[in-house]
Length: 125
Image (cartoon, rainbow, N blue to C red; front, side, top):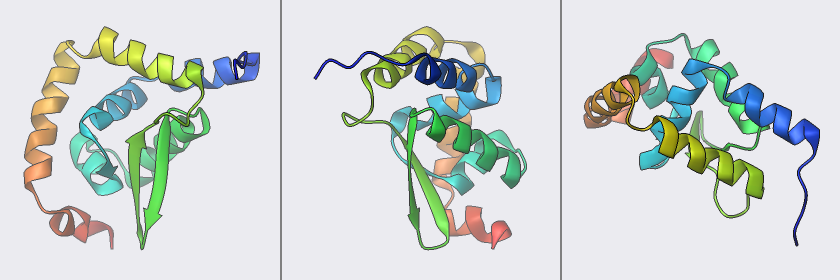
């Protein structure tokens, strides 16, 4: 089925990508699913701020969310997402992946990922 995007879908996507923190969060998911605590550890933002950013990315169809127990895990959208969302994510990865900030985030995320999730999430219980 070849579905044309609605203007509303385009505006949700472009609005979601119009914030540096949301772009950083989205690109952090390139390596796979992350717990919200890992995202908090990466950006050092308040939990409510990260939750709001992730909610906007989710509403735009750019990330998938799954709740397991008390924690929410996020991943980039897959094949079930709209073609526009998949193209937007692919474009963003290609366009922004080599920026200094995103490279620094990738290094920081390696450090965060070496810390157990239990330790990361401990302060948010």
